[in-house]
Length: 129
Image 1 (tube, helix red, strand yellow):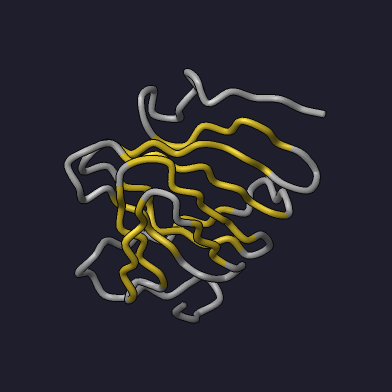
Image 2 (cartoon, rainbow, N blue to C red):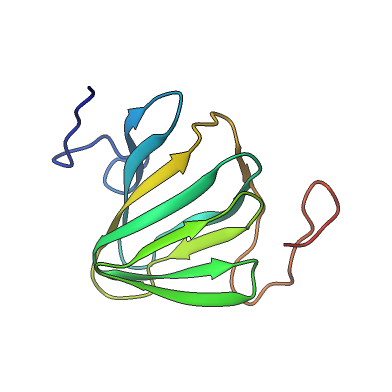
């Protein structure tokens, strides 16, 4: 058994961003915190899916650079392998969610620069998602 705490995790950007809590062969789990205006870059996972469980606040989840979905408290989302996704806290309170990547695939995050309003980018394999 492994155990972790949501209290005072080590966020990538000191006070915000992702913080991994548990990593193992079958899944990675962590917490993501976005302050108002913060965003996680548009990215894709080729080999794992990524799920989100919203704990507080709200954020926009952009899928394939075209579809905007509002993420709110107590909702659960899953992006399958190959689905580009971008998260932005466009509200005025902090956003926090649990993320789960399964199976664990270190190095499987490919950042594909994009922000809302920009043209849809091509992926490394020449497709748009």
